[in-house]
Image (tube, rainbow, N blue to C red; front, top):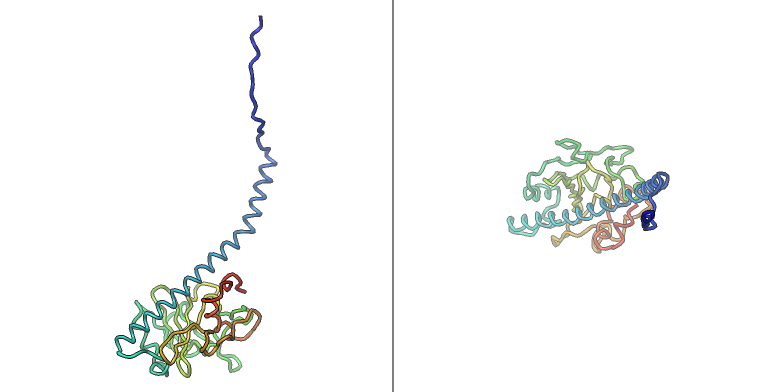
Length: 238
């Protein structure tokens, strides 16, 4: 009598062929190539948003300390005529002095400072772009009454003649995008000592200079308020 036949079982599953594996890997690669730039851009924007909040905080702290130790609130009035830099710079940890900056020159490496040029009587800083990224440079005047770099790498630039502005490159000018409203943001020191995001009600550029199409050399200076208050701001940067 012959031995009983061996029973075999199958779960109905088959292995992938080499062609199927290659096709699958190709699809994964295409999806990754499409999604990675988006993920990287989102990460960068989140970092810049965090940097803006940090910049506002450290500026407020420096102004508060200066006001306390000098016995009066630092305002656009008592800090006018290029006094602001000397008032607040000592309240930052290990600042690197860039002199006035802009076309007035720097006394530190231009890698970390923002020097300027003059062409056809227009003073500009060529390492920065405007908000729409269509100018290739920005106006130097709002940034040339004192510059210094603080320990975390942020570059602080001051306008301190008629009105008082404090602008901050939140990741330093050695890192892109180097554009107003992207990583460069401006605040205005008011007559009562409040530091307001530029573009806020009461500031010089209220509801101005934050256009996705303008080629103005100051386009972007008024974006700071929107960067704080508009929920879609960081999702729709040009």
